[in-house]
Image 1 (spheres, rainbow, N blue to C red):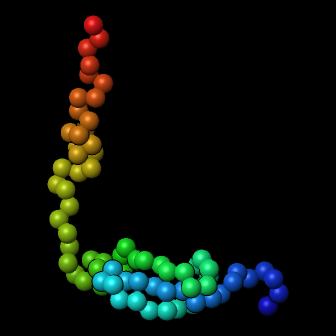
Image 2: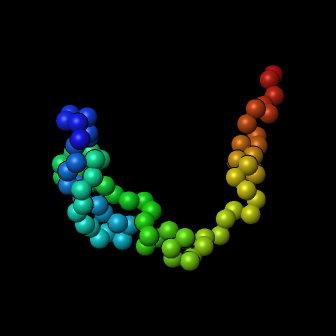
Image 3: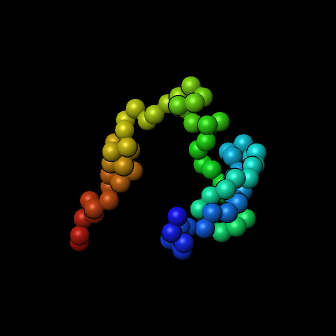
Length: 76
């Protein structure tokens, strides 16, 4: 390996969605930094098999409903 071209490889703390923690080695951040996960194997539907109900109207319909009156002001 060439010296000086590789990123620093150090220990970091990982916090899972349920609060459990473990230490591993990574190139992320600095020595001792903490990475808090939003999605992990304990919470992701692909691993848990639990699906959440998606908005049946869709995101565009939700946006249109929220901002329906914007721009329809009468000038007087």
